[in-house]
Amino acid sequence: MRTGGIDQRILMDFRDAVDHVRKTAWAVQEWQERQITHHDPQTLLPLLTSERIRRAAQLGNAIVSDLMTQEVTRETPGVDKLFDAVQRMHRLLDDLLNRAERPTPPRESRDLGLLHEEENLPIRAYLAVAGV
Image (tube, rainbow, N blue to C red; front, side):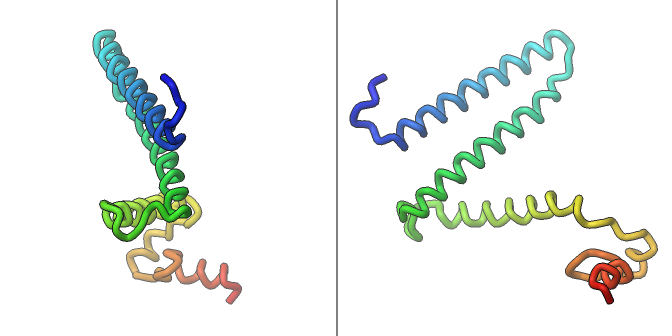
């Protein structure tokens, strides 16, 4: 394929799309082979999820570039739906990534409602962290 005269962004989008089709075709073939050989095809799902995350990050970075060069505006079709999806994804990722950093309060503290609303910590632990 000749690349002369083709915008690099279009060429990269094309290459990314072909790569996605290739990886998806591999996953379908692998799923079928695992079923035939009585191996658990469910083990492919984490690989597919990882690939979706990689592609989402790649697309997100491309959109960031478009935003910085003002190729995306308020009038760009679908920008509002993208915003909503990014907001939901951000909330869920924030919960996922920060959950490990927040200690789970003891059961009795949860039952008594002794939680600091913002930090999701038992009051005594929050006061200890705050140095009070």
